[in-house]
Image (cartoon, rainbow, N blue to C red; front, side, top):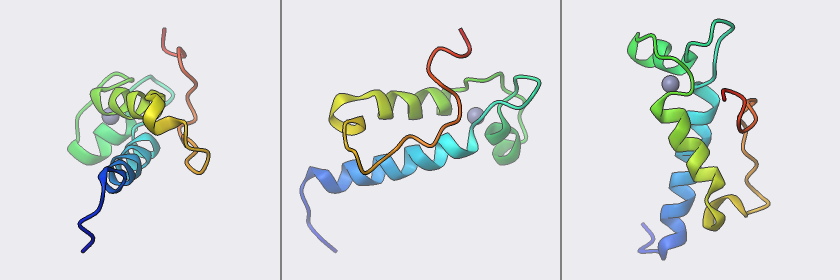
Length: 80
Ligand SMILES: [Zn+2]
C-alpha cells in the first residue's frame, strides 16, 4: 500500500474512465452497449457513464497526460 499522493487517485480514475469508455459505446441503434451488458438496461448513448468518462478525459489535469489515450471510438460532439 502506498500512502501516495493525489496522482494515485488520478491513475485510478483514469483507469476507471478507460474501462467505462471501452464498455459504454453506442450500438448501431444508438443504445449504450455497456449499460445493456452491465445492467440490462436500454439507455440512449451517451449515457451518464460515458459522459463521465468523456469529462475525465477532457479534464486538463487528467487528459493532458500523453501516456493515456482515450480509447473511446466516438469523437466529441458525435451525438449532437
Ligand atoms: Zn452506458
